[in-house]
Length: 280
Image (cartoon, rainbow, N blue to C red; front, side, top):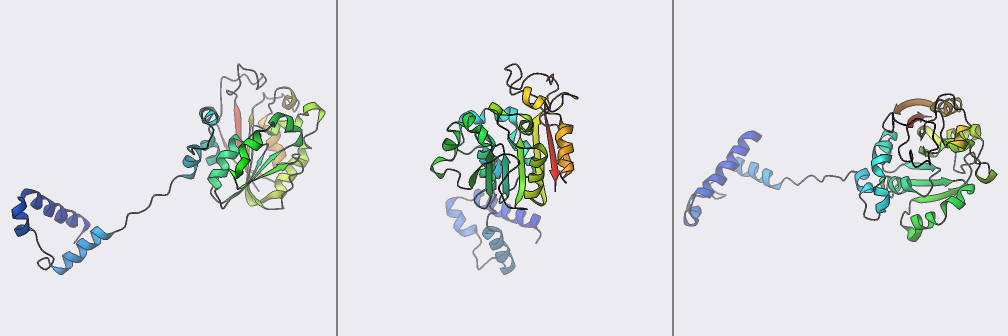
């Protein structure tokens, strides 16, 4: 009996039952002994097939997690975390290094996507201590993200094992290589990209996202505008031994003049950003 025939057979039985009065059902309903053996087996197969469990999407679950700060949910529309991390190929069970994690907007999401089988290193330079305040204590207190470890290091001294990382994310941060808060150096640019190559596994990926500077702005834009030309960091990654494999325009903003400081209220949260992906 085909699946279509089975459906007609089952529907016919239901219609027959519905048309009978309560007294008639006992007489008109086929008993197990009156039903042909082959049809009994097929009917049993139809009714006993277990439901297939549908696994929740880890990204959707992370974004909707009840512990996620409400203020951060409001920033999703401009930061596009799901689209950005999906582009990078984030998956459960990965070992991830989040460079310049800041207070942890992306940390919260990455940690929940990679799950208990994954590991996340949350890196910030020591010079950022004053900017961060108690944000890391709030983010990580009471063991609320147990798969996260904090790295307090400069960008050229990542302090994780060679070839141990599946994915490195550096979001809105590469320009900091040319920024010295309170005169404190954050790491040598070439040394930082050499470290990135060292710690990535073969086939591991690097995601670079940053505020775009105008062509010809030079590295000084990193210190003055907190922007950088995509070509500068792209060349550095390639020189360090990585291969550019993709780029995305998901964070492009054509109305950004590229000349304003990213903290200017007229442009803050609305900057044009490049999104680049490299592979070791």
